[in-house]
Amino acid sequence: MNENRPKLAVIGGTGNLGHALAGRWARAGYEIIIGSRSADKAAEAAAQLVTASDGTLARGLSNHEAALEADIVVVAVPFASQESILGAIADAVGDKLVVDTTVPLVPPKVARAQMPDAGSAAMTARAVLGDDTRLVSAFHNVAAHKLKQDGDVDCDVLIFGDDPADREAVVELAQAVGMRGVHCGPLANSVAAEALTSVLIGINKRYKADGAGIRITGIPGA
Image (cartoon, helix red, strand yellow):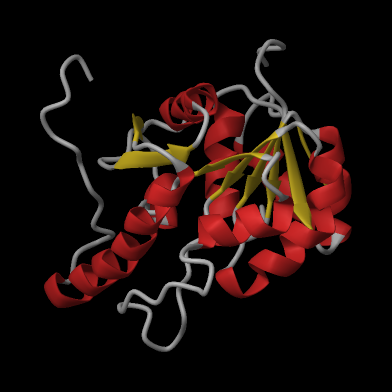
């Protein structure tokens, strides 16, 4: 455990993506707090991380308690729950960095890009949390089952946020899970990656791909 690393709360850490990210960060030496609407389910999911990772310091709390205790709050919840869960933790966030992974998938046509009224899930989060919140949008285009596997993941993480320093903090989180983080500009640009998720779902279906991802080519030194 590296005491200089930020303490991470993964809100929705009982779900596929949240639990996969939490496991990767735990193995990289981060202290993890799993957040869930049910503290009991969060504790159960955290115990699985401890079992899977020697020396892992992980625990489970309610979403609000997890957000209160963390240094960085990662939100990995379904789009249908995004507004209600963000609203429930908004007063616990304060000046902490929030990393929202939400993609506006609308069943049954999840392979069709369907943006919400706010323009994107990221801008929906902005409306709920307020303009002063340090908000970054990332981890949209990586399959959870790829993160569950050992080794690096053959996919870049597109990172959106209005503050380059906050984006850089998420670049470090991407590197910790075995991926390359790429600065992609302001939060409003997140609509591109969110829509691309539906495109990738369609590609997976058409070509029977095992979790297609994306790579940005031609970046010097990256």
